[in-house]
Image (cartoon, rainbow, N blue to C red; front, side):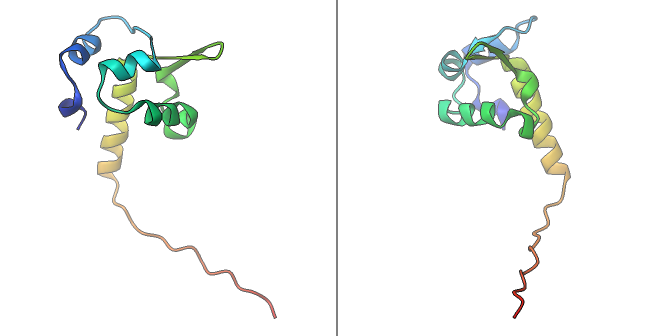
Amino acid sequence: MIDKLTNTNADEALNLEHHHLITVSQFCKIFPWPSEFAMRSYIFKAKELGLSEAFTRVGRRVLICPKIFFKQIKQMENHLQGDSYEATQKPKRQVGL
């Protein structure tokens, strides 16, 4: 999935030897996915999603390492493909009379 969503600038950014940090707006100009809104959601839920290594906070500013971000997304994708999805129902709440 990730391979289909990159353009030439994105390929150049991902092939850098060092882990360069860029802002959210710079990231969204280079990469067509995810949108800025989605990226800010990923930042907010970074610990829950396992993406915290890709983000660095400097004061209020959040910087992203694209190489680590896409590596972690790829790991999530592989993990989800390996797991079988089973729909689970929550037990119904019983009301005492």
